[in-house]
Length: 190
Image (cartoon, rainbow, N blue to C red; front, side, top):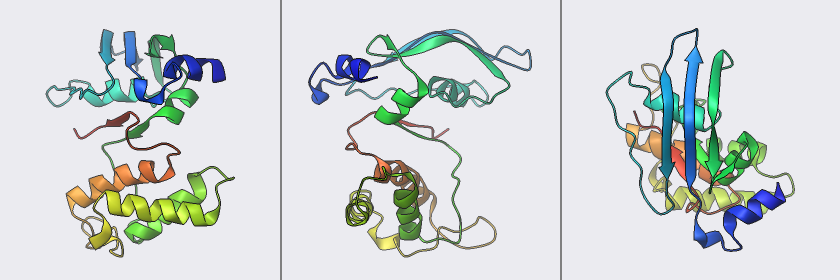
């Protein structure tokens, strides 16, 4: 995909990338969830997808990020700067933080981020550089005060606050990114 990547950036990473979606339909279990949904998220702007509970906000985000369940039939397409995109290309250029946090509740914030860095970062990145990135993300996302706090399990083990949990979700993606946090990130806080 080097050709697509060059076309997306137009030779200048600061030019930005728009996310477009055209005539997206979603059919799980023969029940129509979305009908011909179109939209665009422009670089440097905040896009809010709003609606009542059950309106399909998470379904739309999951579909756009190629995270729909296998029993869902999706039509239409997602594009970056007008070029159709695959899930691999999209995930290499952006991060998607889902609304449901999936953590090992007995780990501390730092242990979790170290684990993410060791397992998910490019294998050619040296250990020292990975640990430096973990510490950088902890500082940038205001997790320093809770870096040695157990993440926790609701109702069982006391741990992080809701805000700290959301920042840790974002940090999990940011710590493994080979790019800075100015790249597109799609947050689902519904």
